[in-house]
Length: 317
Image 1 (cartoon, rainbow, N blue to C red):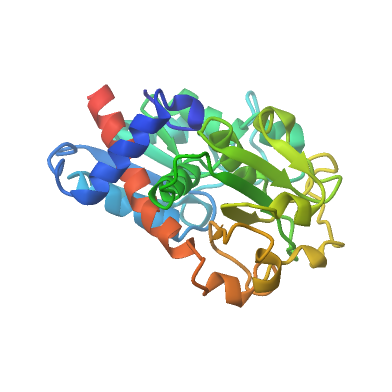
Image 2: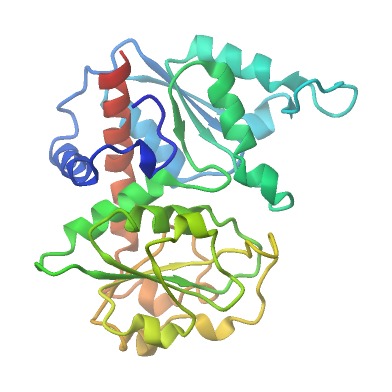
């Protein structure tokens, strides 16, 4: 494995989960693995959990860490090949990424979608240009279409909290929001669940279907109550329209989950990637309630990131 940008970079899902749980038990077992290696964390968009967990993961492995909020601290980047740069952009990605690759042994990149041009976003133009020109391993810290570190942490969390022999029923439910949010978390969660040993269901209003390539093994149910029946884990997340790209669905306020609605489930654990708009996307009583795994998910972001960086160091240096 050179890069980590999707579940397709994982050779053995169960083994990766076991490795992450071993890391969790002994954080500093490989504290010299990253000696004299530097990771550059490049953020084109805001971050809390991803930034802090990945930075701490690298430090736990003995790496040096450089962080750049390039949207605020760097030059405006040009991504078009052959561009005549007589406008707002100052530096071409060919030059910027090549320089970063000389300073860093690994690069972590966060680059959200525009939600304006679906083809450009789903071609992962920004991420792929970085990979092309930096010439070092790249870890996705959330791209235009996927958030693999989050999904890895989510699967670790499910594994920790499922002790029965049968497959758990995992439901990804759409939730209301006031803004147009990317499909990245939902795409990614679906992609990972479709490869995991679970019964996976997605529920959302009609018209909010995710790209089919991410949901091929999922069961799609448009009735939220029907989907929630006997669920063991309920993952709550908003996403904007893929078909009517980037549009906000404003008619779904009745999709907000609360304690009464969760009674339909098998006393399901409730999950969310954070940040969450309380009482818009998910109710206070579920976020703060006994069934919530939201803080556990956030905590597992560290062990997911540390496992990924450990594997990249072992395989490339």
